[in-house]
Length: 495
Image 1 (cartoon, one colour):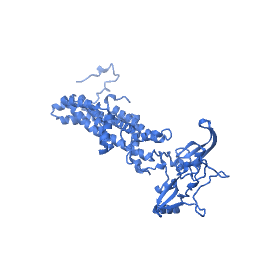
Image 2 (tube, helix red, strand yellow; image 1 turned 30 degrees about the vertical axis):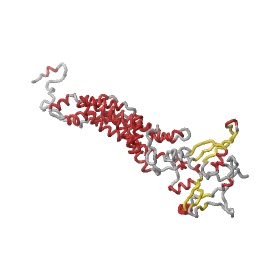
Image 3 (tube, one colour; image 1 turned 60 degrees about the horizontal axis):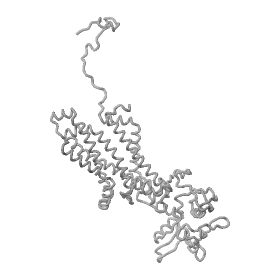
């Protein structure tokens, strides 16, 4: 079929010689795309990457997970090591201490009376700064001398009394001579102690009145009440049990350095029992993350199997399973976990018991999601076409329906993780589940232990609370980002 140029004169202003048909001598055919095809998961990843909030939360989750994994490995303190003398020690950053920054240095500002001031002034390094004294009115209108101090929470432990074997004493004495670090200090003459408060306190080495106020010399210095021999020399050690035991008095900060090879310095401080919060919290976070992800994985497997069978076959199986899920879902979580802890925790351990309690509930949500997706897709045209071509049920389930429902299933599984973490923290915080031991702990347990000292030592609660808050918030935002990325109905919403 040919066209004359006159037919186009209303539209073209050109001569007949200039007119020619485009692709007149070419054979028209489909051209190959230069770009690669974009799959469902790649497209979902691109959509997820555009959600900056979810990406940031994903990075934070990764950082928290790396902290839980590697902090106990690289920390100088083990999660199962504790020191009662340093219970409630404040957070200390060695870098800030070396730079002389009065922040995060293990010290706190406090106000004390005269007796307490005398007590701390007798301990080397306990008072970092003395802001002066003033007279204040205390209870019942009574006036008292008050002192504002900056107190070192590590040095204030001061001196302790120790009973050592002969070998232990000789080794410590050799270390003292080799390093020049003084460990042993003179013993106290108990007959000169006037205040009952200092009757068994190794820090009461100075002369006081009956109320515990120091009796200073003319120069304002403390007067010692050290034990002395017949020659007037200070006694540093007393032998007992025929030379098998040695009673001595040491400066605990130096003794700790001798025992551990380093000075005490806890980055996040120490908790109620003297555990290092930095490594202890990482240990608890590792337990929470491992437990929640294990529950999510097993719930995913069970939910896919049961939900696929329900949604694909329906009928009596679907009816029975739905009624079973309704019954299980109505069982109170607290009551169920309490019964499990009472009857099974001593036999299989609290962690295993907690794991089975979560599995008892968590598979229901996943199976319901899978069931809904199967009901949605099993009637689609491509499923009917595959069945017409002879595809078996297993192929229809695993090759056609399940891949299309994968996005929703993955999202539901990710969103179940913060639920498990939150429930575990609640159960341990309320004391229903006991995970407190030298080997294991949890964030909820740490929060429970620190609540009694929230007003006096808030760091015991602050760091675990910040960790679990970040973890839960980021997991929820991250899961919402996955949901938006995998849901085709939200396409182009963020573009």
